[in-house]
Image 1 (spheres, rainbow, N blue to C red):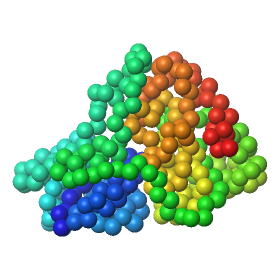
Image 2: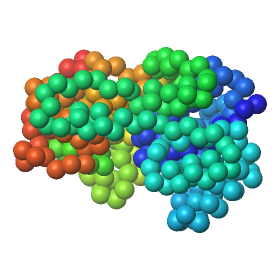
Image 3: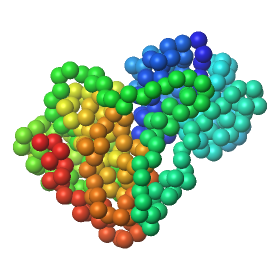
Image 4: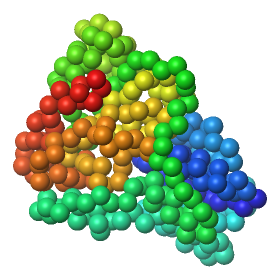
Length: 322
């Protein structure tokens, strides 16, 4: 059994995207075991994948070069890996790579395509093209190790009886989020025919969604009420998820649930569409030449009017569903 030590510490959506890749890679290479090192609270993402051992850590326990040295030693002592897969490629993981190379281990790392992403998000670049999907970039790391991996890019429903629509109206950055008044109007339309379940987290989001629940019949807020495992189970039972370009889209992919995704300053061209999700289910303002202006949605709008979100007609979302 060959043992691969893999690490990706954040962000939540990016860590979630590794899971379907692991599943298909390990099915095609059953004599491999992956030790996935990530934040403790991400464990449920990997709980049903055979041959994945999840090692949850608290990064605050391993600060600075000496802390990372200690982490590297602990992981070697506990797991005795044969190879290392850096699926993150940030300063912290570059330091880990160096330590492992010194110890004689072969280290393979993700190519994030930084330059091509910079070109894609240059607002004066009018020739926008689809870049390699992030899940394929993860798979490339294992291919570089010499393994065969062919990703299906197909959803695998984990639940047979599906009902209701999930809606996750929030995102980490403004550039990814439909204005809340539009989301509210959308829910009012959809709730006439479907039970709508709200997903969110944190105090403010929970308060907003509970308010919506009290104002719109046929809706239920699950914000702040579920553990990650319970949330994944619920998503698996939905007939459809509606999400921004955010972690909830990737959770839907993981559970084999179709997701209608809403994109503002970001764009599926950057490679972050959920695994197995259809491009037909992408909702965006197509005729803005400045899009995408950001890979992660964290930049201010250079026009100042957030046209990519303000001009998005919610009827486009409704039409995808009916």
